[in-house]
Image (cartoon, rainbow, N blue to C red; front, side, top):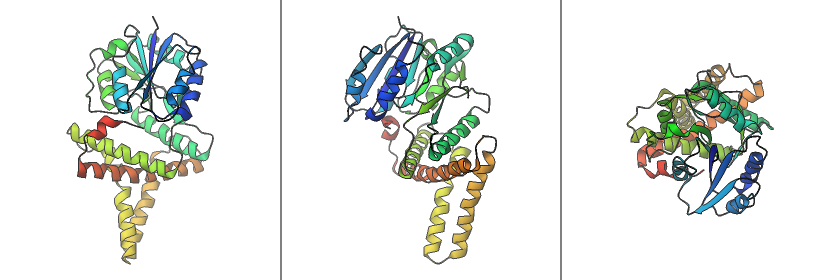
Length: 323
């Protein structure tokens, strides 16, 4: 019996999957059974996974495209059912050789913990990557209130199977909010900042940053609608750049330069507020400025997606989850 059931959903991830599986091959912890589910990919994802047969304790399943979120939900009841631990690992996450061992050791030594996840950060080999990683550190530092606990990171959460038996995750929720809420009712969620994995699938272009923000805005709006939740302050903050840009461009086109300058000043203040709010996260000035620009740009997409979802009301947004 494997101690850890590893479940990986992959969709058109051939570019990342080989590196992800090679990283698992170097893991010092080997008592796991890995299941890779190819979600109807149109590239060589399944073939890449199958090439690791014999190198990893691996099963590859091919299925029609149905959305990564549905495949992840299936993992909650996945085989081997007798494995005491389950980890849902994204196909673009690189784990260090000691990552799995450290995660399991933390759960073994913290009996009240229901799950643990590392911080998934962008590759910091470039200024772009360092800016993205700075943003992720800021979000996680805020979410964990500096305590290294209270949340799980999507795509790399390791959970006690016993804590999942009574979990009832709504089928229409495609992100980790509902699962985290269920697990939090079972025990502590660990998210230590010194446990880091590399997220290969981070946006590589401004267009991808904008598109990711739009998808997130669609999803958050759909969750708010489905759960009848009030709009949170964090979401209101993320909505601000879009009206400011619209006002700046629209008033400029109409020759209303004072109004355009005022909206531009508002955007400058938005960036300044980000720099002030993020002062406790370590980083050089170029990295901070890169992060501020990426944050503002991505929130243009977020606001657009959020508004679009409220206008059109598309429930399938929550059920899709394709990356």
